[in-house]
Image 1 (cartoon, rainbow, N blue to C red):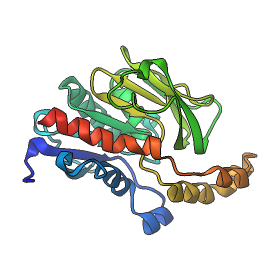
Image 2 (image 1 turned 60 degrees about the vertical axis):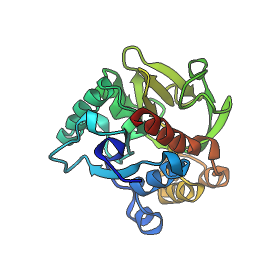
Image 3 (image 1 turned 90 degrees about the vertical axis):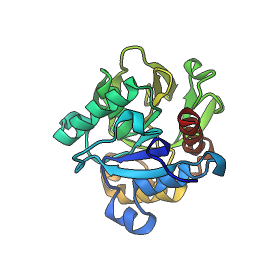
Image 4 (image 1 turned 120 degrees about the vertical axis):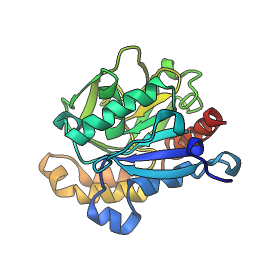
Length: 249
């Protein structure tokens, strides 16, 4: 398939994974691209990565098929200039009804961009493989509607969307995180969990943070034993690619 600007799905990179992870597994954009490319060949789009931290020019909404915003070790509440520029651009993309998927930091940045509130989670870090419940608002949702009522997901986050943007619909939650997924408008989604993480990546995250987790009184052995593959949440990337392809057709 010949790539054209309107058939390009952009991965907006907002940070890097841990150096040890990058050496073993690649980086956030690589894992996301791998998931997007699980879509049927007939619906696959050309992929392009833009590093939000160094970008000086941004694609116009009318020239792109969709956007995926990566996770990051940065904090949305730090209001870094590059992050605020990305938020302003995201708001224009959502206004143009271009499909958007924000992951972890991207989820929080999308909420911030659209008038929500991001803060440190009051009960601290959530890490490992966790169970997430699909909420009533996800019934019939184009991205999350096919998921089972309860599904596994990989998580590592210290911040949370404390207040959803005006008009947003909550789609998924668990006991720790009330806003594990939301939608604004017809085609903009944020997910606090990581659909791009493999169980191997998640296990390595737990190992890398083990000293800090132990100091915080968390059972590292139990966290490691609890890590498992999460095919249901991982399926969201291919599904998003299909939605973006349909919107660009």
